Length: 67
Length: 67
Image (cartoon, rainbow over all chains, first blue to last red; front, side, top):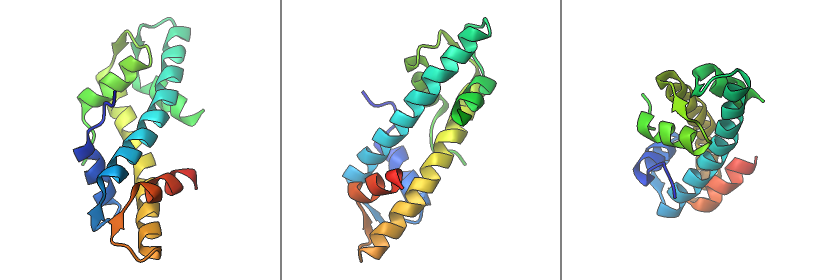
C-alpha cells in the first residue's frame, strides 16, 4: 500500500519543470520515494532503539539519510 | 513549500517499525524525500525533453532514479 498520493507526486514532478506528467510517472516516483523512505526509516528506528528511545527523532532520520 | 504531508511522513516512519514519532522527525523525512525527488524530477524532465516529449513518463522517472 502506498502512503504518498498521486497528486503529491504530480506536484513534485511539475516542480521539476514538467509541462505534462503521465499517471504512470507519478506511480514510478511514488515507488522510488517509498523505497528510499523504507531504507531510511528502518535505519532510523534502529538508531532510536540503540539510543534507548521509543521515539524516532529528526536526528535519527538525518543520520539514517546520511548512512 | 512542502508537497508531502506530515501525516504521510508519520505513516512511513511507523511502517519502519517506530513506536513513537516526533513531529520534527516527520519534517526531517519530508526534507530528505523532497530533496531526493527534486534531483530525480529535474533529471527526468531533461530526459523527456531530450526525447522530444513534453510529457514526463514512468521511464523518464525510472532512468533518472538510476543515474
